[in-house]
Image 1: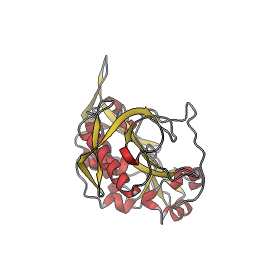
Image 2 (image 1 turned 90 degrees about the vertical axis):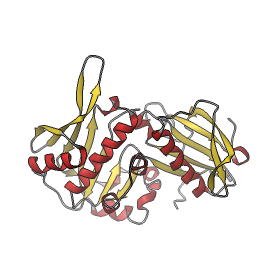
Image 3 (image 1 turned 45 degrees about the vertical axis):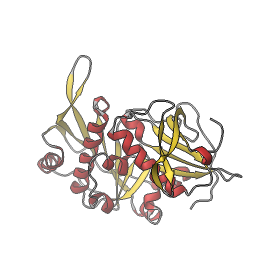
Image 4 (image 1 turned 30 degrees about the vertical axis):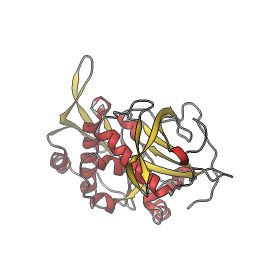
Length: 292
């Protein structure tokens, strides 16, 4: 675990854009060509359903997801899925704060950043108009298509949440439903507060779906229990389109598992740790730290 001390930075303009594009970076040891148009179209159809390739050249490929329609005030159009051509990559662009929260690749992240010098960037467009569950499913179907299209990919970096995950873990997953997005599109982060016994667990990535991230400021409890609670709570928010109102409660933890016998109060606040964003703060009763 990193012992580096980080500075809180909640400056305006440094936070994620709610509902912004879901951006995927695929990392490679060697440059890779753009797959053929027919191959890409077939793979997208396999994982996503009906698609239309509306652009294809040496710089990018674009597909309209015909079963996923974004509705705006004056128009309707399919969500677009874009894949860029291979470009140079340098792991040195990631600062130590971001790297410290790449929990899925702790043993491999330095090797990945050293060996992988190329990337392919993929993203959705217009997807913010979709309901949260629909967008989450589409983005994960897109991810599955990319993982199969690019067999030499070493790792995936998910910019919205800061997760770095080995490509093999993406290809081999058997997750279904909303938990797919929670697994790959949401990062549960862990921090200790300098010169105190306080700890912080929060999530990053829920804002892509216009849902609140979670925040726990606490002491005296196994942080792994809190991390598991955060993943479960995030899945609940996504599955149920965030039914929690300000001041309501959520099941807390007893003996390491969620229990209805323990109720923790929920409050909408600003995040305590960067990036600046709105969060659903979970007040952990006797384990809570700080003022609310």
